Structures are given as C-alpha cells and as structure tokens.
Length: 243
Image (cartoon, rainbow, N blue to C red; front, side):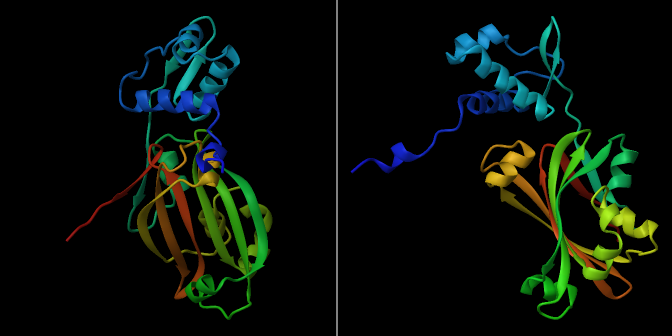
C-alpha cells in the first residue's frame, strides 16, 4: 500500500520561497527600504531556476510587500496597516480608509438572488424560502486584496441597486439612495485561511484571518448581514470605549 503522505501535493516551489521571504520581511530581517537578495542569490540559496525565483518575487509584489526597481533590484515596501474604527456615530469603512489616505475599491465575484439560508432568514427576520441577494466581493486597499466580504441583502434592496452594488461598497450606496443605516450589531473573531482565502488574499494556507460579522438595521428592521474576512497584516479594527 502506498504511503498516503506521498499522494499529498506539495505547494509549488515559488510559493514556498515567497512564504519564507514573507516571514523574514514581517519578522524584520529585511526592514522597509532594504533590498532583498538578488535573483542569482535566491537561485543559489534555494537551488531553483530563475523563473521560479521570479514567480516568488511576483507573489511578494502582489501581496504589497516589495517593489521592483529596474536596474537596482527588489526592495521592501513600508507596510501601512489600515484601521477601521468601530465608532458611534457610525463611520463606514470606505470613509475611514479615505481619511487615512488609503484608496479602496471592490472586485465583485458573485451577486445573485438565492433562497435564504435558514440562519440568515432568522437574522433578517424573513420567512423561510424567501429570496435574498448574496454578494461575494474582494476589498482592495491601495490595490492589494485585503479582505473577502460576503453579504446577504433583503431582496428589494438587492433588486433596486444591483448595478451600483456590484461596483462599490454596500453601505455608502444605500446611504446615497436614502436607505439610512441606524444600527450595526457586530462581533469580531479569528479563524484560519482556507484554500479560497489563501488564493483570494494571497496569504498562507492556515494563516490568521480576522472575521468581522455584522447585522445592519434601518429603523428597527434588519436589512443585511454578512461577514468580512481580512488579512491581519492589512486591516485592523479599533474601538474606543467611554464611561
């Protein structure tokens, strides 16, 4: 009988190399502004081809960790972490990021009507087998995939603003169209990156992920709920408590 471990696929070499370099960058071995080893040095260190090294570096560039300078090499970028302040009165993440000098955008993956799952129907206080709109999107901060958001929206709002919701952040669109958000119930948890999160957010499989779960109300009526799963090195949450 063949050993079951022999059937497990090892990660591609370029991902192994980029993850080792990523760890060294985050641990401070290569501070911001410093140059990482050259292609030739990395080829010798890891005993791989030039194309493998270039793929590893391209992965670091995509994660926003390094920048290539023609004729000079590859340098570690200054790491700026965005912070979403969970404040009262409510400030939406798009406005919060802009105030900190970050550009935000979304990449829409899915936007479609579905039959409401039971646990979502309970949160939105709608009957079983009702229709809701489900949206899955990637939040880009300064062009870097930083969070994966999944939202369930009551049907009338999904139908009314379908085109706009596939191009921009949810809450500002609703506010601009006269749908005021009066209350958000939220919880923060942690989890580990599965295959989809690893690929979408360019993080290691099993790496730490922040989970922000929310339920939004207009008046006393819940109108949407969902969760935002974010890279801990790209997005933080802050709360101010007063007595």
